[in-house]
Image (cartoon, rainbow, N blue to C red; front, top):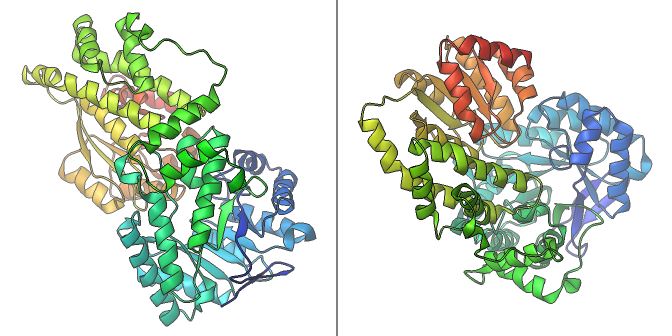
Length: 547
């Protein structure tokens, strides 16, 4: 079967066509440059980015305007209309990329030819899935289907193929889709994180791709390629090698297209042999120490000319410096000894956490944010932190049993539609260490469940977390529900896509009580302390409004 798409020109994707490149840089959530241009109103500059993707070899162009601080529908319409006036860009098909159906539909109304929708899923059940699919069919587009259902994102081979098979059956039987207009995205997830459960992610995607091509007639397979290498953000040499090696194996399994940075793909055969071996050890899960070996290589690439400090020289530093070094380097060998020494110097065991341990984790966060640390190293740092906290817990429990009462009860949750919880978990640990009673409801939690628990457990604070853009809308919904049901508890907002500005402009107006953005775990305790202190709260609220 032929997948027939078009901009001003036809694009027929056949088995002989080869791999189709979907240009990724016109995505406000994935390209800082493009985001800055759109937020600044520089649509001419944004068009130049699109033009560069076409000139770089993109066969299709992915356009995403999911940003909480702009009118995404208006931005999508304006940008697509501008593209339509540029024949060099408009000649290739557009992939309308959004997590909001209203934005997708607004985009579909702007386009001539045959576009691709990115994406729909079974996240909200079959009825919503089929409603959107039938509209896509009416607009004459093909669609990408994410391997995501009511239980969340598919993260292993069996879940991927089960969801894709179910979606294929629904689309073909109930939405009049031909197999060639169905493009599955079985979720390219990040490998080399340092977590055991992530080791087979690339293999699972490749094998799911092979299964789809063999069992779902006509269906195509796509994916966001750069996700695979997020662990090595900041090291383009390693990332480009990972992309090239991953594509080499995935295309052989049947991958038809992928969202990549057109013009910046490395050639598989030209990857340095040692780097290629280490990359493939990670991607194909061939060695237990594959991640460590690739991290070592990446560090050498990042710092070829730097002189390394002798391995044990840091042991001569004061204990605060040793704890920071252990956290940054992920060293657990001396953590109990050093934590005990720090405890002896502090008045309370909690002071060790709030002092040198949090200071060390702040350094880790800064290094990761600037691309100078990689995700597997951050995971190792978190393990060091966890070990130090575990050592201190008996001492803190002894303090509690001596008469300390919990300072307050906090209900925390990652909102509905979002499966990410690393940041939330760290905040929870820090609050628990500060004698707060934390009720963590986990991920993908509906608003009704959050509010029901808060009411039943007599919570003092509600904390919401989310990593992806749709979570921002869900947080607004939770705030609206809290207002409707008469809650007056402080509402904390946190997560990678959240910001102080978005919280103030988009969330706070819907809720009549304190609504505060929390930047990271190190600030959570101070915020909660202020909100639950009757003397400090008025001044804190005033300062928050002014900022």
